[in-house]
Image (cartoon, rainbow, N blue to C red; front, side):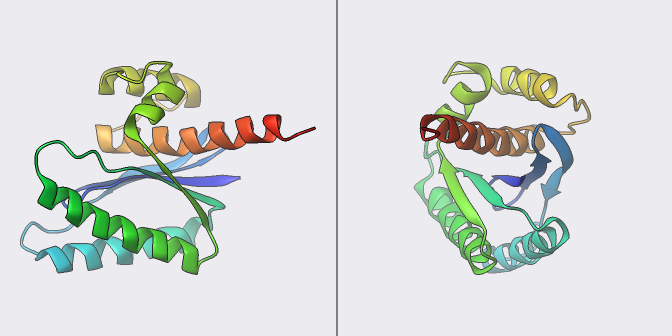
Length: 159
């Protein structure tokens, strides 16, 4: 089962694809800072469509938005997430939205884990040690979280 994980962002979107616990690819989609918001969304979605065509995933897992100080940025990321979800549904790909604290808990056992702790556990779970940034690590952690939730549900409903 192939799962794409997404760490959403307008200026930098982290992505990763796993098959079971194996990392197939990870990286970032980074539109030019000169593009308008609309241009950035278009650029990200175009690249995301190509990524879906390349891997034909079964599941898409997206880290939910964390709203801290800037509501405008959260709204813009929400618009981007809507486009990503629409793209996945139009390609018959099921999706999960998983809150950051739940991802951290599923990966490290602690909902308040640091990015370094998440990276350490993702590396050890996947035996992949070539992450270039936290967006990649977070994207793979998001994909792994969906995998763990699916396995947990399969065990619960196996009877």
